[in-house]
Each structure stands twice: as C-alpha cells, then as structure tokens.
Amino acid sequence: MDDLNVVMRERLQKALEMEEAGVPLYPNGYAVPERLRDVLVEYGQTTKEQLEKDEPSFTVAGRIMSVRSFGKSIFMHLEDAGGKLQIYFQKNQLSEECYALVKKLDAGDIVRVSGTLFRTRTDELTILVKDLVLLTKNVRPLPEKYHGLKDVETRHRQRYVDLIVNPEVRETFLKRAKIVQTVRKFLTERGFLEVETPMMQAVPGGATAKPFKTFHNALGMDLFLRIAPELYLKRLLVGSFDRVFELNRNFRNEGVSTQHNPEFTMLEFYQAYATYEDLMRFTEELFAEVAGAVNNGELALDYMGERVDLTPPWRAMTLADSLVEIGGLSREAVEDPAKTMEAAKSLGLSLEKFEGHGKLLTKIFDLTVEPKLIQPTFITHYPLEVSPLSRRNAENPDLTDRFELFITGKEMANAFSELNDPRDQKDRFAKQLQARQEGDEEAHMMDEDYIRALEYGMPPAAGEGIGIDRLVMLFTDSPSIRDVILFPHLKPEKKM
RNA sequence: GGGCCGUUAGCUCAAUAGGUAGAGCAGCUGACUCUUAAUCAGGAGGUUCGGGGUUCGAUUCCCUGACGGCCCA
Image (tube, rainbow, N blue to C red; front, side, top):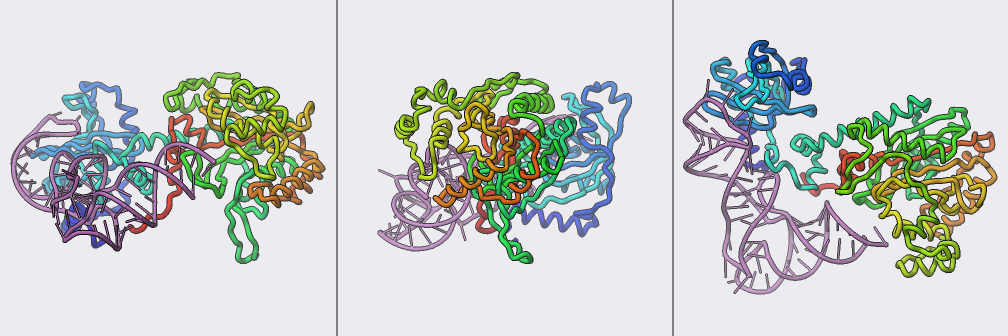
C-alpha cells in the first residue's frame, strides 16, 4: 500500500482526520428499516403536492454514487442493488457538525440518512436529510461516473466494482437468481425432489469430458470433480425416488471461451415412466415459465439482434434430416459412411481412429447445422455411438431416443429416454473403455457400481440436462458466459 | 494450441512519421442553497504492462514475456 495514487492518499488522509474528530469510519449496529426500493415502490407515483402535505419520512442507506455540491446545499445519489434515490442536504436543516461531515463525504461512501421525502423542481423524488450516519468509508476512488467501468479484465477480476458502477450488470445477476428460482419452483411443483449428489467422484461419469483430478489424503485416493451428476441421479431412480433433480455446478477440464467456463451450472432432472418425447413438452413449458418470470411473460425475445420466438410447439427433426435439410448434405452422404467421409473431408474435418460414422455425423452437424438453429429446435435420434447412456430407438437400434435442444445456434439442453438394461449398459461402457484405450480421453469410464444399480432395476425413465448459464445468457441477451458468471475464471494477476 | 488486436493518470480515452505525454471525469483548494455527466476559477496527479535490443535519445521501432479481447482448432 505504499504506491498509492494521489486520490487515495488524500482520501485516506481525510478519513484519518474524520476518525480523529470522533467520526467512526466503520461503525455497525445502525438499523436501516427501509430499502431504497421500498421508497421508490411506495412513492414512485406520488405527486409533489401530496408529498408536501404528508411529508413521509424515511431512514435508508446506500452507497453515494454522485455528489453535486453547492455552497450551502448538496445533492447526492444513493444507490443499492434495488434502486437509486436522490438525497438533499441543506445547511440550515442540519447541525454544524453534521453539515461539516456531509462536506467531507466522498462518492463511494456508504451512509445512512433519515429525512422527509419531497420532489425537486425537476420532479425528482428526493429525501431532504435531517440526520446522517457514515456507515462505511470508501478509500478507493470509484470509476468514472459517466463511462463506468469498461475494461473487461477489470470488470471480471473486480466484479465488486463492476456491480457497484454498472447497474445493468446487477440487473443480469438479479435475473439469473430469478431464473434459478423459477426453475426450482417449476420442478418442485411437479413433484421433483431436489437432491445433492457427490461433486467429488471416484469414477467421473455422465458426460464426455475431461475431468479435474484431486487427491484425498486420508483415503489415499484420487478423486475427480464431477463432469455431470447423471449416474448418481439415476441411482436415485433405482432407489425409488421417481422424480429427482439437481441444480448445481459441474466441472470440465477444458479451455475457457465465451461459451465455456471450467465450472458451470447445470440442471439435471429425471422422471420415471416418462419418455424423451414427454420431456420436449416439459421443456417448452419450463422455458415459458422462465419467460413469464423474467421476460414480462413474453414468449419472444431478442438475442444479439435476432428475434427468438419460444412459442410452443417447437420444431423437431431428426439429426439425419437436419443434415439434409439444413446442412445441405445428400441423403446418401448421411447414410453411406464412405460418402459421409467425403463430405467431412470437403469441410476440413477428420476423424480419430476411435471415432466412427456417428461421431462424424455430429461433427458435420456442429459445423453446418448447429449455428443455423436460431429458433428453438429439437434435434432427435442421435447415433448410438455418441449416446452411451441413452435408450436405443425401437425401430433403429443404431439410433437413440434422445434429443438436444438448440436456440440461437447453441446447445441448450440434452435429454433422452434412459438406458435401463444393465447388459446393454455394460456393453456400452466396454465400448467406451476401448475408445479410451485408443486415446479418447473423453470416453466414459467403466462404472461397476452403476451397472450393479441397474441390475436391481431402474424404472423406465427420461432425463434431461439444461445448461443454466446458457439459459441465463439467452434471457439476458449476453454474448459471453462470463457476463452471467459472477466470478469467471481468469489467470491470476501478476501483482496487486 | 494457432492467428489478429489490445495494455498510456484511480476511471474513460488522446498523442508521438523516435526528441521524455495530454484531455474529461474522479480527487484537492476556492466560489455558489433545486442540482443531476451541475457550473466557474486555480492547482495536482504518470515505472506509457514487465524484460531485453537498436539508437545520442524508445511510450513510439525490433525481440521476448505476462495478462486480456476476438476469431479459429
């Protein structure tokens, strides 16, 4: 703290002087009965004349965000997460000591004020302050009041500053909380039980991804941060909880980008006796519920300048059809592995030796179809090869009863009727194991206990995962996942 | 992992065809009792991301590293 800039030096000096004069810099125990939002909600519509008659009085607290000082009167704006309210000090309304303190306040200080509500000449709701307590002294200057904090790196590293000065960022995270709340309520109301399953797993399963590895000293064993809760949630189906969900963090040891954070929030839910087709309707309803909560009930929204309409029913098509109709492949190029390979090569795609025809189709899909799926679209009938936990399709055993949901060119959900035949599951794990041995680091590991659970009998069921971060991005018009994660992962700063 | 771009005052941004950096806001001093990006006057604030090189001289050019952004894999 020896390389302080001038502003901080002066501010610290001023703070010390205040303290010496008997003004505590960081007191506590001062009750704040009303929040700024309460005042705004209660009196937002009340006229100037009515206020002059009633003179309602309030005690509120907040951070000083701006100061407009005149000789014997001072205007400030007070702000908290819920709103912004102007406060007004007049010299002859306050004791001498109090007015002297007011003059020493800085933008960034947190204060409690009591006074009466009125409207200024410009009709702005304002508290004429009668009493003031400094609650917390700021010693680090806030970013510029007009441009705010723009530097993306600083905004992420010091999210607290971002939240102080950029109200739209607060708005995004308030919305995120509302979305999570709505999802929980939606599931709970439909009889789903919220559960918590291990985040540290001996066998990381339920998805194709690289895990983080850690070590348990006392047990002397490796553990992995979960890449998905799936296999544990399905164990609960075996254990007779027929509707369960978990809404929490997953961890994947992959690169960071505007679409990926190493830890991200996933909703997974499982419903016994349902099929993946039931979950399509369920998903449409869930999105409508969320829209009702955070999009003024509107089923249409704008994302990155594009209109997205969430009105059900959403379009559904098979993966194969999408490759033909949207990807522009010929039917033969989809069905004949040799022709598929040709098409892939012309797109610059190649295959690892452990990858087959099914994997190739999804690679072509990612490139040619996915970005074009702006409106909500269910893509169904994924190849068995890329769906090691999904039930086989009754008509075509090389396909699965599965869908992925795409909106704005991004995968939003993945769902399938669950494979509950322990023999088939064991074979699938064996195939995954083989791919792993051939170099596929993302292939599933054998989970003997999961097979054992299936042998006890898992009811026919369908399950789904929804990426909460992407859901929030959609509803907050955010281009990057870092815009919806409070503290996204960054490399450490060099020094403070 | 690759390519391109960026990093200058607390914040938002300028500038230098290589000659040691400037504005607004914030902050400081002063004036001002209805302002709201308040206004006016004065003063203050810099390791130009780090390291190395070329040069009489580098913030600028070259190399290298760190961090970040965008795109690609």
